[in-house]
Each structure stands twice: as C-alpha cells, then as structure tokens.
Length: 163
Image (cartoon, rainbow, N blue to C red):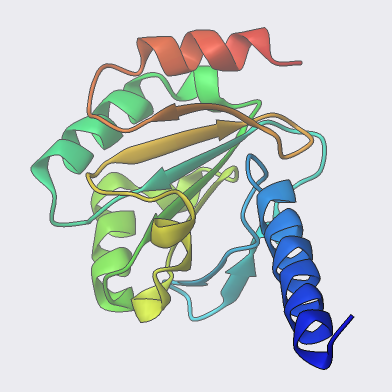
C-alpha cells in the first residue's frame, strides 16, 4: 500500500470515527449552557436527575412565544413532574424582563436563560421557528419535537405518558 493510500485510509477512518461520535449524540439532550437573569451560568447537567425535560427555544419578543407561555402557565400542574429549560439567544436583560413578566421565578422547575450568540442549542435542533419545543425523557432521550406553534395539549399528553 502506498503512502498516499495509507494517508487516505487514515483520513477516512478519522472521518468515520468523528461522524459516529456526532451521530451517537443525536436524539440526546444537548449539553447546553445558558446565562440566567441572575447572572449565574446554568448547564444541562444542573437539571434534576430522573425527571422528563422540556426544552423550549423562544424569543422574549415573539408574540407566539408569549401566547405559548400563557398557556403553559395555565397548565402548570401538568409540567410539575418535568424540568423546563427555556433558552433564547437574546440578551440577559430581555430574559430578566420575560421572567418578571410571567413570574417565572416562583416556579422551581423552570430555568430561563440565554445561550447568547453561540447558537449551540439553535444549531443542535436545527431550529428555524419559535417557539420550538423538544421533549426528552428522564434519561435525556429525545421523545418528540414540536417545530411549530400549537396548543400544548399533545405535549401534556406525551409528558403524562413518561414515567
């Protein structure tokens, strides 16, 4: 085998290994980081263990996101057994205003913050529209994705099926 063939083989094996690692993470909870309105960094691993996880990618300036938030608060009892991570790319001051507007500090299972301009979560889920919702089970496995605005009825039903 020539030196060129060996180099090509090494490159191909390396490419396959990297893609295997990336694809093996597909369908799992992304290892996100966000800055909360209190200035603290919150990471995915800070979420309580053993509970379903709802990831909501939103914009504090989005009418559809506000509508979804009002519905979520009305159905808050249905979300008690889950951890809800609400992530935006907008500035912390906008996050703080949103948290205050909806009184989110009084819910111990809702975590709100900004990922800033990293767009890690946005790229991970390939988000094009907001609000975006991803439901993960207690082990971090992706159960269902909601890419368009709609009533939270199906999300609540899916959440109730999880143990």
